[in-house]
Image 1 (tube, one colour):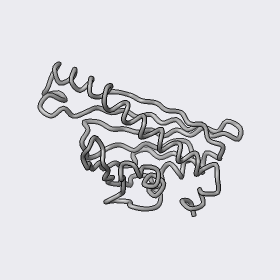
Image 2 (cartoon, helix red, strand yellow):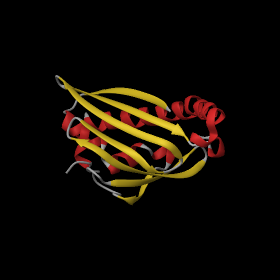
Image 3 (cartoon, helix red, strand yellow):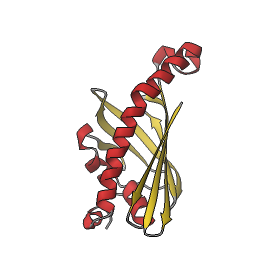
Image 4 (cartoon, helix red, strand yellow):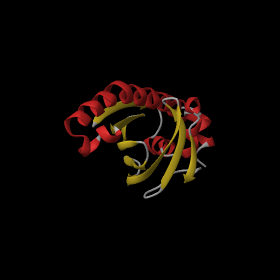
Length: 169
């Protein structure tokens, strides 16, 4: 398993940032490069406790689907979405929001692990663990870092302008 953390400072209230981070529409708008869109579950608006969404997007030259569920929900401080179906052995994303004066410090923590087919997971033993670790660190980590940085830059731009009103009614 690999872990990735990214901190973004946003000049906007934590409640606004929290809601924008769980907006399906903002997620779609911020990931045009991958063609990401919601195809099942909650496909527009805000995700709430226990709800799920299936994303379809182009990653690593292939169209892929990943279904995630909101498994923790503590507005406006924290929420977690976890993969319940998809191409990875594990994908967990914690979103934390903390106000520091007029700034919200948004911290994303990704935990993920590649599914290496017959070489991955418990069945693959040591070889699968080594192969999975290499894929996690050399392929998935840079991909997720770029993906998350792009999404967070868009979220910050929207939250700090009047554009947030397009997503939160």
